[in-house]
Amino acid sequence: MPPEAAESSNSRLQRTLRLYQVYIGLNLLWYALVFILGVISFQIVLPQDPELANAEGVLKVSGVILILIGALFFLLTLLTSKPKRNQAGWMTAFINICLGITSCILTPFCIYLAIQWNHPEFKSEFLQQEFQL
Image 1 (cartoon, rainbow, N blue to C red):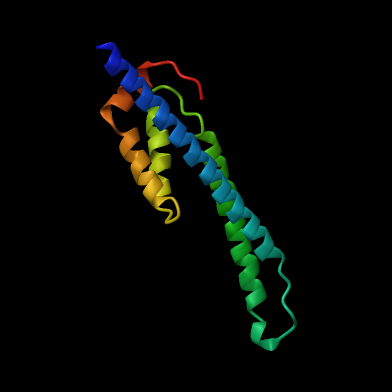
Image 2 (image 1 turned 45 degrees about the vertical axis):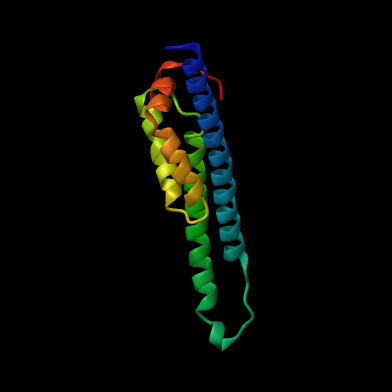
């Protein structure tokens, strides 16, 4: 491989890994906010009004659900923040990126990142070359 091609390939690797780290940071922030919203929802006390009799129970249940979702996905995202340099690490990170596509907030960013992550040059460099995150 000519030196220019190797440099370009290494540049793609570093750029895509930086984008992945930005994605992880945004995802962690998002799930932390979901968790905090769940805690706030769980702690809201409504005034004693007959029209709001069921609303407090709904807020408590939705608060617990948001807390569980926020905590679970925060931990899963944290576990995939530094993928191993093997096929399983590449696939785990790719699945994490694809999960981000389902979130309307990060969809455009995740589609671009998924395309870059799935690029043959990136995949071969990711599985062969030593790197630091």
